[in-house]
Image 1 (cartoon, one colour):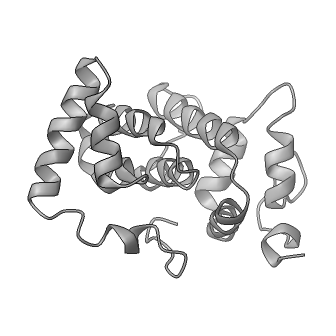
Image 2: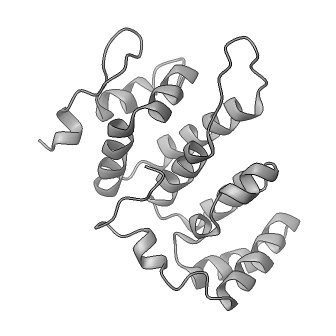
Image 3: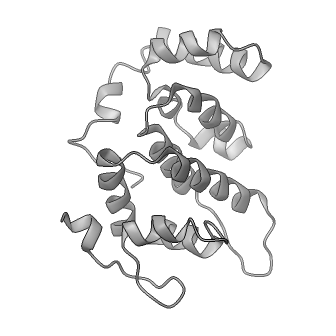
Length: 181
């Protein structure tokens, strides 16, 4: 069995160390993905790497979408009581995991995250929205009748014309690990 499925990672969730598989399985419990799980993933670089390796082999769009939604929810919830803060890298990471599943429909979800606030607009790379391919994404967005899709289409088209996607294959290459992981 690969190391990322069996290795124990530092940090505690619910008083025990979790593997990637245990993390995903516990997300199906009634509480779903908890804030503690998100913070563990944010703070644990080895666990983050394990998830990337796992998702490259075992697609799980439902989990990735639920994780990204939880990350955004926590970021958008004022939390003065425990000073929880979701870092920009964690948002990018959530978008990346979703993108590894390859559903062009998720381009709008990544766009939504990018447009969440000024910081996320600056922080979330447009390359994360075109994980299914630049032209596939543009064709998909052109077929959607919404302001968000039109805005995303216009932005991505300008980025394509400017050459922002020339190295897109490297962005999702199995031979590289993104800086935000």
